[in-house]
Length: 81
Image (cartoon, rainbow, N blue to C red; front, top):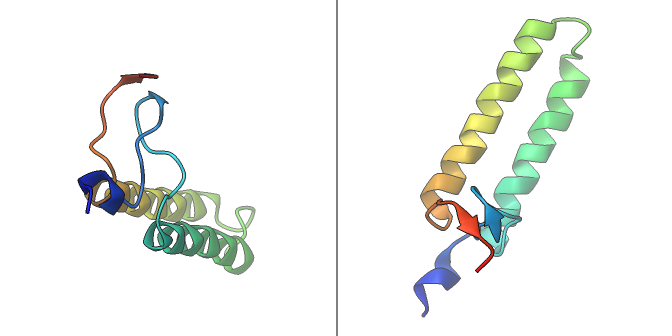
């Protein structure tokens, strides 16, 4: 199997970072991230505890970036080639 076919998150064509998931595992991680954000919004609205809400969003986002870093294509600047 081609090594690039194992990446859950392909690199963006332009710029630095990752695009949308390309495998079901990536989509499951992405869906879990969105579900966690929706649950957070409902359980702890930002108007009640804005600092805590923002901190949890940052932690969830760092977890998503960590999974992308581990399971995605190696990040580097791309010029669209």
